Image (cartoon, rainbow, N blue to C red; front, side):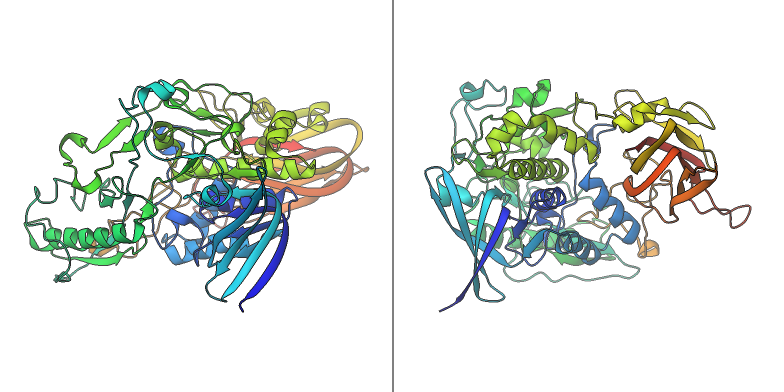
Length: 602
C-alpha cells in the first residue's frame, strides 16, 4: 500500500508553468494558504529549461506594454543575477520564487490524476508523486487549474471547448465555415552554437532525411536571421494534442534531427563551425482544452479592445494562429500562419478566469475562457503571467471574504482591481488609487515638476510619460501640516520596459532556441536596464528638524519596491543617489538621471 499525505489549503493550484506560479505567488502574498502541484521537476512550463521558450507578451509587439507586477520582478532578477541567460540559473530562480515564498507548499513531480466534485463543487484533488511513490490529496476552498491541458475538466465535469469555432458561433472574421476539433500544434525547441572550428554531424539513423528545401516545406532556417527559432518544427494540430502527445513527440524528434542534418550536410548554410548543443525531449504545447467561463473572450474583443467592468489583466500579442498542419504545410508566403497585429492593449475580464459550471474552479494560462482565435493572442506567457497574478489575487480576496470566485467577481471586483494595481499591474482604462496620506500632504521636489508621480499611472503609455525626471542628490518631499504616522513608502522606478537601453539581448529571458553567438562571443553577457535607480535613501524629519535615514538601498535592481517602517513625522523624502568612485565611474547602471513613476507615503 502506497502512502497518502493529506493537505489542507485555501487554494490549490494545479500546474507550475508561468500562470500557475504567478497564481500561487500572488495568492500567497495576499495571505492565502496555497498548495502548488506541479507534474515536472522544474517550474516555468514552456519557459523552463526543459522546453526553453522565451517569454513574450504584449510588450513584445506594442510599445509601452511590457508586463509588470510579478513578471517584471522575476525578469529583472534574472537579468541581474543571470547575465549569461543560463537556463539552469533561470530554473533555480523560478524554484526559489515559489519554494521560499511563505504560504506556499510546493509539490514537484506530482501529477494530478483524480478529483472529487459533487453538485458543481470540488472537494479535493489527488496527485501521484513519482519521486516518492506517494499520493497527495489536497482539500481546498478554491482550485485553480493552470495545467495547460485543463486536467480538472474531465475529472470534475467542468465545461470546456476543443478546436476551432465556426464563424457563426461568435461572429468572428477568422472563424470557420464549420467548426472542427483541430488545434495549434506543439513545437520541439533546439539550441545550436557557433564554434571556432569545423564540427561534423552524423544524424541518427531514424531521423528524417530532408535533401532540399522543398522536402523541408521551405521552412526558414537561416542561422543568422534573428527571428529563426525553429517554431515550425510543429505537429499535433491534426491529432489529439493530449492523447497523442508521445507519438507526436517521436515524430518531432525525427524532424528536429533531420532539420539539423539538412543544415549541416545538405547545401551551404554557413554552418560548418556550428554544433547542435541541445534538443528538447518535451514538446512545448500551444493548445488543447479551453475552459468555458461566464464570459468567452473573442476575436472581436481582442481587436476592438472591448472594455470590461471586471478587467483584471490585458493582452497585446498579435493574433498568431498557427494552422493545424504545422510542419507539413508549405511556408512560402507565411501560408502556415494566420496573423493580425494589434495596436492597443485589450482588457481581459475576471469572468473569463473562472468556470461557468464548477463554482470553486478558476484557471490561468493557455486554458482560459476564450475562443480559438482570441486564444491565439492570449496564449503567450507574458499575458499568461498577468492572468495568473490576477487569478491568484482574485482567489485570495474570495477566500478572505469566504466567497466563491463568481461572488467575488460581482461584489469585490473593485478591491481585486485595487490590489492588482497596487502590486504594479497595469489595467487599461483604470487608474491606481493614491493613498489618503499622500493626498493630504504637500508634494515638492528640488528639481523640476514631480506632480505626475501621483497620477495613478505608473508607466509611459499613450504618449504620456507619467513620471518625474530628476537629478541624483535632489529630493522629492512630502510635507504635512503636523506630524503624522507614516507606515512606509511605495516606489515605482523606470526599468526600461521597452528594453531600449539594455545591452545585448533585449528581453528579460529570451535566450533564443538558436544561440546567435559567433566564436568570438561565446562568453556573451547581456546587459541590465541602465535607467534603473541603484542607490537611494528614504529620510524623515524628526521633531528637532533633523533628517533621519529610514531606509538606504545601495544595490536596488527592482522597478517596484515597498518599504515598511513606522515613524511619526511632518516630512518624508526620497533621494536618488549616485556614489562616485572616480570622475568616470559611478554606482549607477549607466544613467545619471533619476526617472521615477511613483513615490508615495502611506
